[in-house]
Image (cartoon, rainbow, N blue to C red; front, side, top):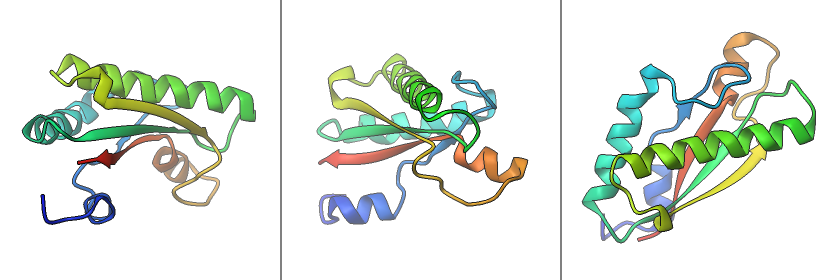
Length: 123
């Protein structure tokens, strides 16, 4: 951990992304173990700060998706805090639909783009 740069840690994806249901921002049951693993890792390194990025699929207006992405990032932050993280070390941002992970117009693509990503910003 100490020998790796922030870029390397984020490239290695030590913190895993989670996905959301259509037009929802609650943490899915199948994503809770991922959130627990992320929290466990973050608690092991209390100096780490993280940015939670909220993302949406391409459907809906820009404004709607920015608001939904923010709710998704906030839900992920609140979940991490409920697992013991210091809220001051978890920031949020919404990218709405502006940064798709994959391109396409099918449900599998939409699902991949409805996500929260966790970016380490400080060691």
